[in-house]
Image (tube, rainbow, N blue to C red; front, side, top):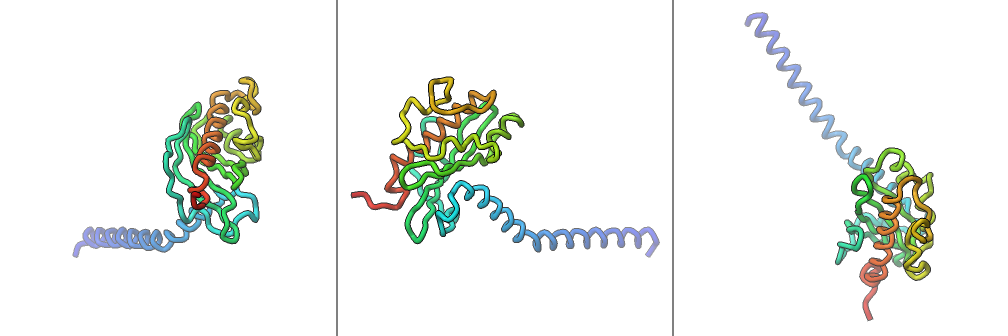
Length: 203
C-alpha cells in the first residue's frame, strides 16, 4: 500500500472516529440537556404562582380548552395548580399581537378570579421596550396583581391616557394596550369557563 493510500486510510479512520465520538456524546448528553431545558421552562412558568400555593406539577398535564380564540388574543394552553388535591390557580398561556410582533404570556388566576402573577415568555418588541416588558425586575406587570373582572370596572381596563386605571410602558402605547386587552381576555375566559378549568361539576 502506497504512502498516499495509507494517509487517506488514516484520515478516513480519524473522520469515522470523530463522527462516532460526536454521536455518542450527543446521545450521552441528550437526556441531561432535555431535563435542564424542561427545568428552565418550568422555572419560567411557575414563577407566576405564589410560593407554597401548589404541590403538584401543573405543567405535566394540559387542560382541554374550548373557545380559544378570544377578543384580542388566542389561548395556547391551560394548566391547573393544586394544593392537597384542591385547585389553587389556573395558568393560561396566550398569544397576542404587540407593536413589533407576537407576544406570549403566562397568566395565573386564582380560584376567586384574581390575577396572582404574569410573565412574558416570548416577545419581539424593540430591545428597550422588550426589557421593560419581559424583565420581572421592571415590575410593570405587578400593577395588575389582585385585579379581577369583578373588582375592576370595564372602563378601567385601559391605560391612564385613555381614562383607564393603568400606567403604560414608557413610549409603548400600542404594546401597553395590547397587554391590558390580553390580560382582560384571560380573566373573562376564566370567569366564563370556571367550572371546567377548576374541575368542578356543573350544578
